[in-house]
Image (tube, rainbow, N blue to C red):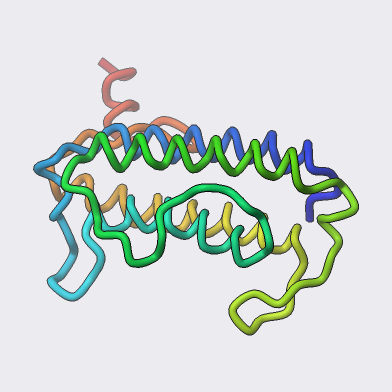
Length: 162
């Protein structure tokens, strides 16, 4: 539970930086990589992260610019990473301007589920971590070198060991 807006902002900056590391490793050629035809591709997962930030925080009453749910997946890995960085920045600025520590305790209904603002904040952070994990598997399948997130990746450990 976040008890202050500053606490959320600090954790968000760390988590967004980790997500940015993953997104900035993607290549245009890797965006179609998926585990199966009926599952999200790397590009779709990356784009979903930006859309979910906007969709969930907008549903919680925060007003800021972001990609609408129906917006198609960009064909450029750089564009996906750039939009994510921009939406993350927009989120932090809007939260700072529109919310207070007291706001975090407010009870809200989002997509038919009762929660609090701090509950939405925690959910979005966990949601990102979940999809980053999926993305690292697909990145390896696509032949990309996975950057470390909560510690060195296999590839980074191998580099250190040499």
